[in-house]
Amino acid sequence: MIEQLIAAARQGVEERRAETPQADLESRLQGRGDDRPFSEALVRPGLSVIAEFKRRSPSAGEISVAATVTGQVSAYERGGAAALSVLTDERHFGGSLEDLRAARAACGLPILRKDFIVDPYQLLEAAVNGADAVLLIARALDDERLREMHEAARRLDLDCLVEVHDGEELERALRLDVDVIGINNRDLDAGSVDVATTYELMPDVPAGKTVVAESGISTRAELEELERVGVDAVLIGSALMTAEDPEALTRELTGADDGTREHLLP
Image 1: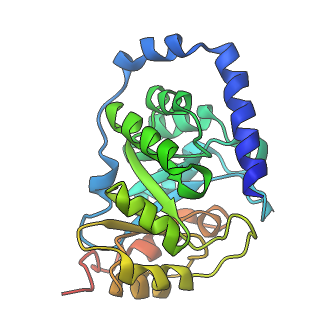
Image 2: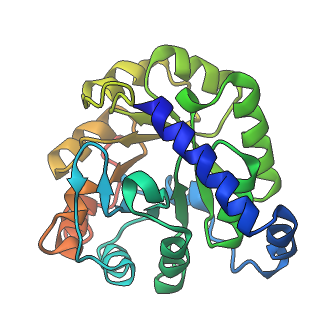
């Protein structure tokens, strides 16, 4: 599955580059909006929730046809989310850069561009369309490319969430000395999800790193257990997108209404 997603991402880059040359994107960098530090939002008191907007996925199919970016992300912000994740992959997730711009205009939260980032051109797209951070997937990039993309993102003042799924990928991320590590409980090759992945990898994450657990998380009880083992933030998409009241579920997950915004750990 991952090879098909990467190939589609590369094709999409070439199509967009033909429509909008890189020089055009570079000329728009000076017009970027206010600074919204993504990494800082993940280490505030309490387990931070990164609330995701996505219309569909290869594994789940259509998730929410009726949801609008403005309505959904506004609900997330009111519910106490610390940050947003916006899917911009069009072929497999039904997303777009327009969704990124709409999210930026609708709320004041820092925004992660979630996509299969394989080319520096996509970093420029992220920067000029309202992203504060980008997802870099270790499985999609070799060591040299991962380092190149990480350094290029930082030069554009974009934070990076470097995603890993196993011990080898975690070691690669740690050699790069990244600040924010995402542990994806989903195997991008098989499509299966197992939250135990986060628990298995956490003991190998050095102190001082910010850890985000991704995929397969939907309840407050799960968040509390993850916080107890040192996870700083969780990225939640499908549960929020399918919720009848996304604001209410966000409030439940974040503890916005019950005074539990303090860390459970001493």
